[in-house]
Image 1: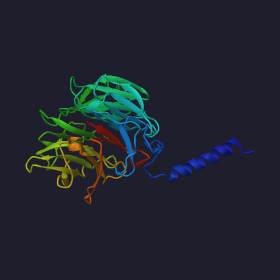
Image 2: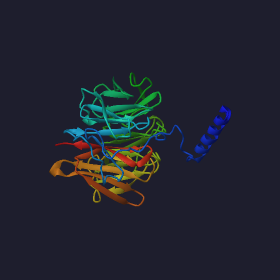
Image 3: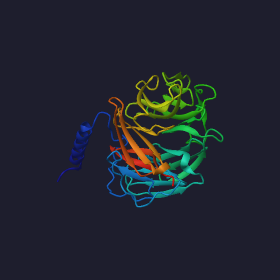
Image 4: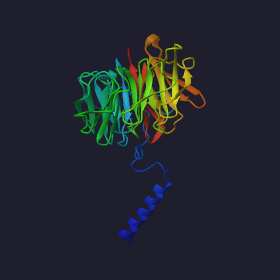
Length: 359
């Protein structure tokens, strides 16, 4: 008969061998370690979210047809196989890696201008660039708190254990230690009378923030907003959209309009946002005032961005771009847009697309 001590010892050896075989940056607490690939050919839901393993060339069919007007956003949580999506007034949850979706709550707010950000464990936070409420998801429950700015929205939100950090529309940073019940100012705005289009907060180092503003380009801080640097050479740019690489937060991208040359570009920074270089212009891709962009969590040299419209029944394009080489591919579909994208934590080649329907 095998002794319990021997069995436990064998288990420990096997576990040690398994851990030693992992990459250095991986661990059992790394998000995605217990995630699965979605085991479905069809997504059972209202059509808000689909799945692609081909960068958008083939989209998984959905059982429901998306109703207008919807701009769906989607986030993959740390909780294994769990995602949250928002659209119209609905908050929905999947607990099987995106194969089926269940209604969590119906809000009084139209969620078209809202975004959803994953938090620790089974939490997510739903916030708007225009509206004040923040909807908090924990497991299958949804609660609501007010944001820090009376009547105003947020350009960015990041949720860490025991702490929320947001950037308001004027560039002021706020922190909460009680899950959004109360807020305190942190640092100072980068300049007076700013209109912030977009912002990114480094989840590994929340003292590092980048904001994109109207007319005056980009500002970056590495010390909690106590001091800011105006990024070069994008001082005369309408900086509409920002993205930060989850794989390497020193990589930052901005999409915007160069006022001097009357041309839209995507610029890249390799130093956290201090200095940018042009990597793509509007002659190669359809760039507008605010293409959504998403950096790959596995490859710091891989950026996805989208364009879509219902005008003339155009549809939507998903671009895959490698800035170091200029390699660019585009996949088209008949939806009216792709306002959101999330990566499967166990396999970043599996993409969840939040879709738009305007007609």
